[in-house]
Length: 143
Image (cartoon, rainbow, N blue to C red):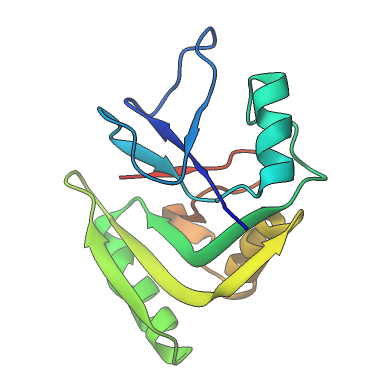
């Protein structure tokens, strides 16, 4: 099964520009969606010219991306993730805070963004600017 991502030049895509879906990076793209889309979901995105309204359509992830906005919370988040005993990497954002990429088995499910957000809440990482990238209806983008 071929999964595709949405690729964007800028974090915000103009409303009059349809999503650019591809497995491989698109020339000029600086951002990739956090979630991959199976063919059925990609068809819905193409038909609607939007990644909105995908609540009942599967998305796929191989990592959980955690965005920490404030420098003073980065070490706390890193300790909590390390205590889980899972593989992860830490990336600086170039501005403030950090991004954590937590390894996970590939999961395809319509409720994956919600489940990932609930997992982060269960770790009590919602305070101080921590959040899963791609929470709720926002499918999130990463550099």
